[in-house]
Amino acid sequence: MKINKQVTLLSAVAGLALTSVAAQANPQPHIAKPGETWILQEKRSDEFDVKDATKWNFQTENYGVWSWRNENATVSNGKLKLTTKRETHNRTFWDGCNQQQVANYPLYYTSGVAKSRATGNYGYYEARIKGANTFPGVSPAFWMYSTIDRTLTENGDVQYSEIDVVELTQKGNVRESDHDLHNIVVKNGSPTWMRPGSAPETNHNGYHLPFDPRNDFHTYGVNVTKDDITWYVDGVQVGYKKNLYWHRQMNLTLSQGLRAPHTEWRCNQFYPSANKSAEGFPTSMEVDYVRTWVKVGGNTGGDTGGDTGGNTGGDNSNSCPDTWVAVTGVNVTPQTKTLSKGQSVTLNTNVLPACATNKNVVYSTSNKNVATVTNEGVVKAKNKGSATITVKTKNKGKTDTVMITVN
Image (cartoon, rainbow, N blue to C red; front, side, top):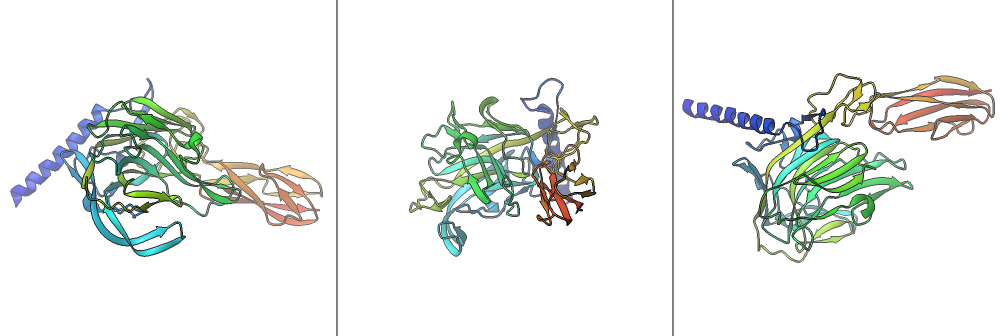
């Protein structure tokens, strides 16, 4: 027993050493420019020397036709293997066509997933992946997604963000890869799904791979900034979009999803198809590594900050990090103001910290008959009385108030 413990300890030390060597071999992403500092985010990176359940959730929530199983995700020989199996089972399923949860719904395949427990947004993400042999039927994927926040109801609010670094073998040609975006944005008071098919100009990038992704490992990456999203395959740029909506905190995810002919698309979701074949199953994708870097410095502002994904540092200068910075508060002046009927005042609103990523705010009044307020914070006195003007940040919902008195 003592010898076994020593062997286990030596193996663990060796694993850590291998991870350290690998990280040192790639200290910066390929997009790094001279003079830039990029920091590896350990909580969203892995060389897969061990199956680390403290870093990854291998039994995350089921969604649609995807039934995730912990045992379908294995790690050996420095590789993560995610396997899809033909397994009949029943569970609760959301039936979007009928807008209801259905208990004991029959499903026919299970698969593997690795979802990071830490979240983040801006940075460079890269994974070295070998696709599954089976085609068509499964789609190896490297992506990130946020929670869905239905409490965000103002026009322009983003309830959901998803960035697909790559989705393989889900089209008719085995060499077609997708590098797409999904989001839910409030438009005209209604949450609206924007998908690659419905908004291709802002949400879709397709690429014809110069290789068969099933045959060997290749690198797939994306660089996400506050302004731009740029995709890469083996270091070559293959897609670009302006970052219009993808500012939410997201979990990094590796998975193998089910596709046609075993699924069909109806009512904005996948359903199981009549094809329940076991041919080609089980089938697996493999991941050699996943690495996430955040660039520090390079923006203007007075504070530094980090995301919730384990940012291990930043610079000490008066510059903002290239990562999501959450709102911590908001101040509005003047705190009180007396106006005569017909007069106006423009509020001075300061969102904290100075490096906060989303500084958008919403103004409201407690009494429109006394005072109104515009989206720009201009208050106009209407009738005698008093009204409270409230400013609320779209990120984190921080508030401050101004008391308006009209003579």
